[in-house]
Amino acid sequence: MSAQGIPYTITGIPPQIRKGSHAIVRSETTKVDIISDHEMHIRFDRTVTVLDPKGDIYGAFNQYYGKGEKIRDIDIRIYDQNGDLVTKVKPSEIKDLPADDGFSLYTDSRIKYYRPAPNFYPYTIRVVYSFKTPNTAIIPSFIPVYDYYLGVQKSTFIVSHPPNIKLFTSFKSSPYFHLQKTETNTLTSYTLQQAAPLYKEPFSPSFFNLVPVVKFRLNRFSLMGITGRADSWKEMGDWIVTHLLNGVNSVSSATKNEILKLIRTAKGPKEQAERIYEYMQRKTRYVSIQIGVGGWRPMPAYEVDQKAYGDCKALVNYTKSLMDIAGIKTYYTLVYAGTKRNIDSQVVGIQGNHAILMFPYQKDTIWMECTNHQIPFGFLGSFTDDRQVLVVKSGDSKIVKTPAYKDTENIIFTGAQITVDSTLGLHAQTQIRSCGLAYEKTYFLDNLKKKRNSVTL
Image 1 (cartoon, rainbow, N blue to C red):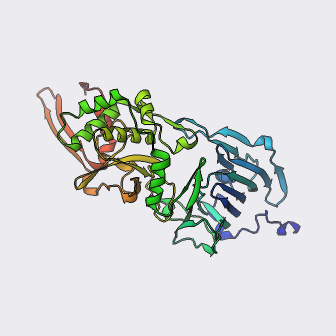
Image 2: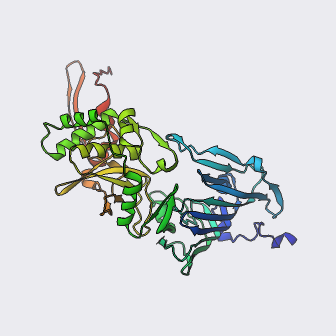
Image 3: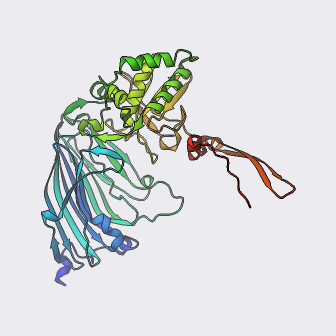
């Protein structure tokens, strides 16, 4: 009976929150203190009760960090279902590893990581630590419900900032969860309480369309030692041009002459752009290297020209530099690639995880994906279609939408002429034409070697 008053017991979990959950967030508080435009302190305090092995991932501790960032005062403790302390994790048990993202050749980011491996369930794990960073350009988002089958008793997110720094906030509501908000001129907080878990269902909307999400950005910020101020997307774009894109667009004289020779017989800017795009595809390959501000600033075009590789930013900047030689105006564009997600217009600041190239042509706009060297000129596919993106243009940066492939365009046409001869031999001539998003499932066939195959039945 004496254990009933201890907050780590499982008896205080309401049945409606426990039902269907693999884990339950008992209490989570994230306190973000903006000290200045180049210093941010974050304090995390999270207690999670894990009900079964599928919930172990929610009890894990992981924090990425980079140069100049520090993780301190890590305290991890594990309790049994009665609230009794079982383990206090030793510092030597917390791993400190390179943060391999799975596709970069090299990155200088690191991660501190601990995942419990208990021999009993349920258990409760409390993780407390602080994080200090000079990079205030990116503030963590508040997503209190961050997966299916996860109940939440209480989760709070607090941001404090000096009065001379403006905080941009974007709140996406949810029909299933209600956030309580408190706001002053220097502090903003959101709280979610007593949230039952969501269950995954076939054909349901995207998970992040079901849960509340709050995003934050500052109008004065620092990124890897580069300070900036932006109260509008126009100012944000100018900062990107000045500090990230300026001085990285030159190529060799030999390449300039090669490009001029390449486009000499082209009929108009569109054909010139297509030839240059295909030149880039033939010459380069995609390689991701993320070091310091290089995670945001493109590798110089002359290095891509020499080494014939680069990541998305570098290849877009290189292609743009080649277009400049021909006098073709194109624009560096930031986008969230992969799962459909928009640049959030309400929080002015650094956003996006990918770059593409925009070419305004007459009454049309042509978009170029520069990392895939098999797709044709002007084809985006589902990787970056139908979403809000930031077109970076000196003095006129703005958020626009990439084209959507309509259902009537996503079609596969199949035609076949089949003949059975007197010996019961079967002869067929087939033509398959894929359009729209259906094409992205077949475009690789263009690069296969042609073979004549016969099959005996």
